[in-house]
Length: 281
Length: 273
View 1 (cartoon, helix red, strand yellow):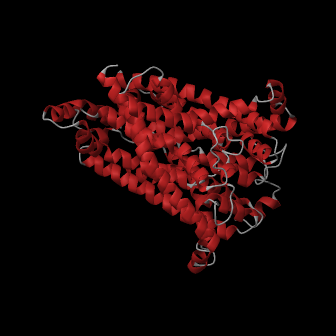
View 2 (view 1 turned 45 degrees about the horizontal axis):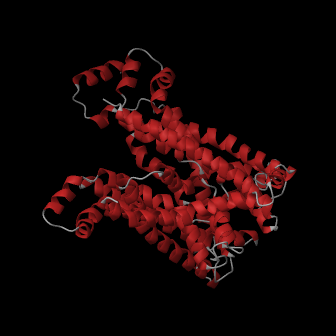
View 3 (view 1 turned 45 degrees about the vertical axis):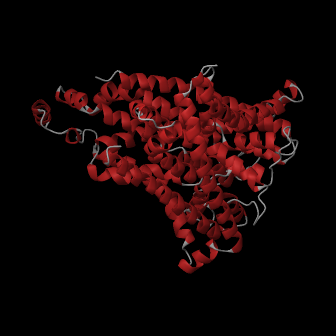
């Protein structure tokens, strides 16, 4: 077997994917890893799905569309989409400044963008309530309102919007823009018709990631939102309350809805990336 | 002012204002509020027995979850790149799942599995094993939510490097383990380090999943993030802010490591033939 490997490498005819043969796919490695992932990832999710549908589909639907659940899901969906869209704009602008502009302290700004990624969500929520809650030094108090939730979501999803766009922006060929400018195009036109279309896949992928992230947020909003049912109760807070009052099936039902929404967003993202790769993106 | 700079200025100012209001300002406020009544109060709030226990709990979570996820992350990464083809899509999908799961749902899953009426509830009770409201369950959800990072960092490097060197080593008689330790491992070292930093930051910062399964028992099953929430809702802001500063400092350290390792990752890419 070793000889065959040597012969094939020497022949150099095998295309790259085939050269990456099953070096380490010893049965132990495959078995052990599959077992581990099944227990740690698949088993818990199976339990949630099973609980949600334990009384049949209509019971699931009933639980997922109860007035309080529906209000929570609606709030969550609206806020997540709003945050994703806003982040698409803000993220692109920030990426633009990071790539095309240069000024003292730019590296510090790069660190700021990544900070929400490293900071625990409960601390994120606390930082926002410190500046925009009661005792607000700037006079803006958004505690216990939907705006508070929105700001918290913007905080936690900030890196996704920027980091999705930044590498693509760096790769853009400045010659195309220079050519357009030499043909008389104004900067606004160049942005609209050359730059933005090239960035579109990246912007969309950032939006999908931000959306999926925002759907499940809990720590950052729990302090600032006030969590009033039907008003400012986010889906994750609803689920948590249901668990605490022993209504596990209702919690599982709403959980399944969130999972499906997340998965749709991430699958759309992957499909988009595959399409971009095929079209030579 | 050069025309170029004049043109760039509005967007730059807008972006800096946005980041200042959204990130820098709030984080600075937390430091300010923590030391509002002097450093002494902040320090004593964070060295109370409950606080110290919470710090210990948080470190315990990371100490168990991170090595587990690192080891299995490397294994999964190897499988994904060098393993059987039919395994790749399902394995990749399973590895991505924890990113799609809201943390509270991860907590719910453990309750459904290990609670008194759960799938394994009766069995666990007969054997005297308690997962909920104690640290083992907390570790398990922490493992779940921080699972994919190492694997995700390792995969692109393994793909890029290719397996020729490993195959050569094997033809020269190296065992699987020798090949892994002396050929594969050095090439993925930076990726593992970066993944470990991300995993650690994520594990330390976890709130939602742990809050569901731990019962948030002060002095027993509180991690530092749970301690923060508890102190704030109990109208003890000094302790809450002080503990947040501890977490923020850890996050900043993680960020510093990330930046340094990112630089090293780029060097590795650039030095490829």
